[in-house]
Amino acid sequence: MTVSNYSAITIGWVAIATGIVGLLGLVFIILFFTVGQPFGTLNDICIGLAAILSAVLAWMLYPGNHVQAPLLSQVALVVAFLGALVVVIGSVLVISGVTGWYLAGLYMTAGNAFIGSWLLALNYSALRNISFPYGLVIFGIISSVILVLGLMTIPGIFNGIDAWDAAPWYVNYIGQAGALGWLVLYPIWCVLIGRFILLGYV
Image 1 (tube, rainbow, N blue to C red):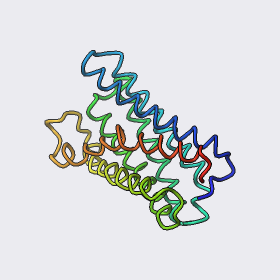
Image 2: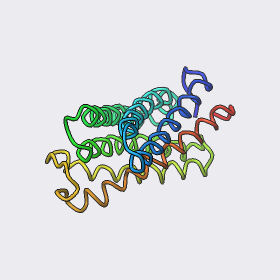
Image 3: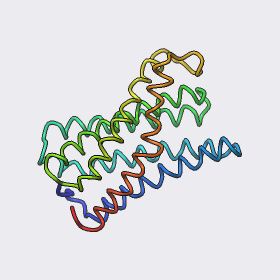
C-alpha cells in the first residue's frame, strides 16, 4: 500500500503517536481506579486525542487505500471521521460533567467501534493486496472485530442510560467488550504499523 502524498515518516509517527496516546489513556484509567483524580480526566483527554489522531491517520492512509478499494475506502474514511466525532463528544460530556462516566463511556466505545470499522476495511484491503506483513494484518483484523463489538452500546446511548445497572446485558457485556480493542489492541497495532512504515517497507 502506498502511503499517499504524505511522507512515510510523517504517517509513521502519527500512527505511533496514536498508539502511545491510547496506551497512556490505559495507564491513566488504571491510575484513576487506584489513585483517583486527576487521572480520570487525563484518561478522557487521551481517549479523545487518540480518536482525533485516528481520523488524521485514516486521512493520511486514504489515498493509498483508495487506489486498491475505491468505494470501500471512501465509506471507511467517512466512518472513521464519524467515530472520532462521537468519541470526542463522549470525552467532552464527561469532562464537562454533563453526563456521568457510564453514558460518556458508551459514546467513546461506540465511536471507537466506528474507528474499528475503518480499521477492518483497511486491513481487509491490505490482506488482499499483501500491503502489510501478514501477521500484522491478522492482528489488525482481530483488533477491529473486537472494537466493532462496541456498536452494541448504541441502544444505551439512544436511551440515555447512565448507569451500569440500568443497561441491558448486551450493552454491558458485549458492547463494553469493545473497550479491550481501543484501550489495548488498537493502540498496539498503531505502534506496530507506525514502526513498519518508518522502516520504509510501505
